[in-house]
Image (cartoon, rainbow, N blue to C red; front, top):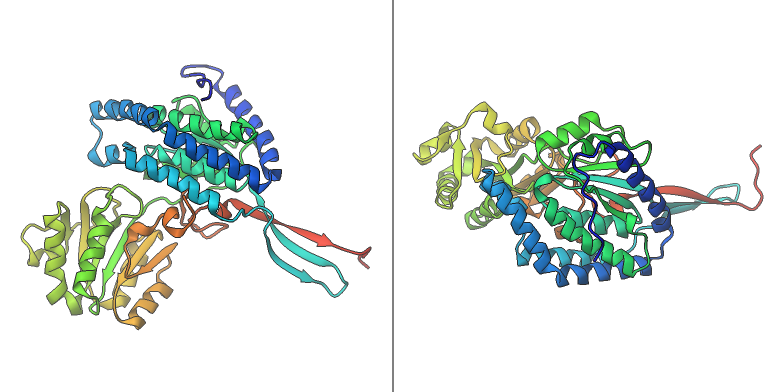
Length: 430
């Protein structure tokens, strides 16, 4: 395992240390950009082995983190995001294996054409360079981000949340062990060795050109700060205000299964549903069973007048509820007049993250998929599939809801840009 990272909390020379980390990452990025796929895959294979072999150490470190935040009065949703168990460690390692198995995006020719003057032009994928990932409570992000950046030929600087500091260090040890075994520079995956919040501001400054892209993974306040202060491009989503619309044509059993999973599988993930929309034309048969199912599963329902009438346990929804990402066992629910009204509601209140329709009517489904302007739209499937692993990316570095460069789950391919290679035979421009 690696030598312990130097703890520098309270060190007045933090700016110098962060600048040095960025310089080392930049040097490592140049090596990774030219590393053959086989060498990167050897590192990924070693990382997977290290995570599995050191599961006990990772869990012990995580238990200390969880005990600390529990003592501090953290919410159950926050603790769920922070907590690692053997199953989550196994999933982390499985994700590394999947990333190893996907095609290497670097050097892929995405287009080629010949000009009338005989020159051949190719568009080729290249790494972005140095990526800064700032995340909060989920320690598995350290592994996901580290291996995706490695696969795509990028160096990465990880700044985990103070609440997951021990867990991230234990995971980072495994990442560095894999790099070392493959003969790649250890600075290719760097973990900021301090809980000092000033490190975030320094990363947002770009560290004198040392960072090319910032990816925030965390709550609304973190992402808002990053988008407001970053001096480099950002891949991010501010909120996951996700909807499930149940059309009148939906099969009730399917609708119940999808809605329950979308809301309650894991309430603290960004793909969790936060609003249920039910078609008025099917409300007589669909609304009451859906509401009762949610409440009996431990979910608080806040509804409009129509929803309140079907169950006395429903609390009145306020205007704020339609714009809230709960990340908890709470859902807002309302009755709408068909697919057009559902789309209008999502356009007004959604966050362009992930939205789903449950319907047997093919025209309604096609309209929803075509007109809902979200990064991910689903037909007859749970919003909890908003995850890079479920898209076959192995993992994701985040979900991007913007429209420039990357959108949706950001995997290895999305962590590349491109350049043009032009092949001539002596052509000059007249």
